Amino acid sequence: MQASAGAPASSTAKLAVVVLIGLAIPIALYAFAFQFLRIGDPTFHARFDTVPAMAAFHVLGGGFALLAGGFQFSRRLRTTAPAWHRWLGRCYLLVVLLGAIGGAVLATMAAGGLVARVGFFLLALIWLWSGAAAYLAIRSGNVAAHRRWMVRNYALTFAAVTLRIELGTLTHLFAVPFPEAYPVVAWLAWVPNLIVAEWFVLRRMPA
Image (cartoon, rainbow, N blue to C red; front, side, top):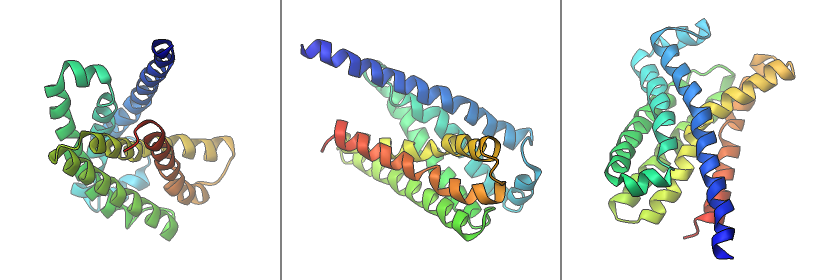
């Protein structure tokens, strides 16, 4: 009974990892194209060009974090290639650091006014804080705490995906004007993600 009960849970976890990676890859590639090929909204480029280093930190750091983070949840990677898992984890936390610093700077000039700017700044701050907590946990040898913090952190990284899904849904499906939709997704892109991550941590990864 225990084996049969565990199989669906294992299959669900594998499917979740596949979905996370599948959704993250195109958004990460878009980030790279935005930075290097200059695709996307020219008004964003004009704003980002005022702080080019911080913009590159955020765009490229977020893109690399999206790509690397999803694979870190693969049990096969952790068990069959632990050295690779550790190396990829260090790279992930480094790009989160860069992405969060850049994001905090960009948040102060975000479109959407004060509501959007506060939302994006808090996202950057909590993204940085949870990454630091994950690093400190693993440095102290607390693997369980490290994994819990990494779940929370990647939920915030994944805000890059949920933001675009939600913004597209609001502006195209429900015809909400961009100036009204953007302040909403500045919060909606990450707060529900963090709530789901916390639910998962409490249910599946208790202390």
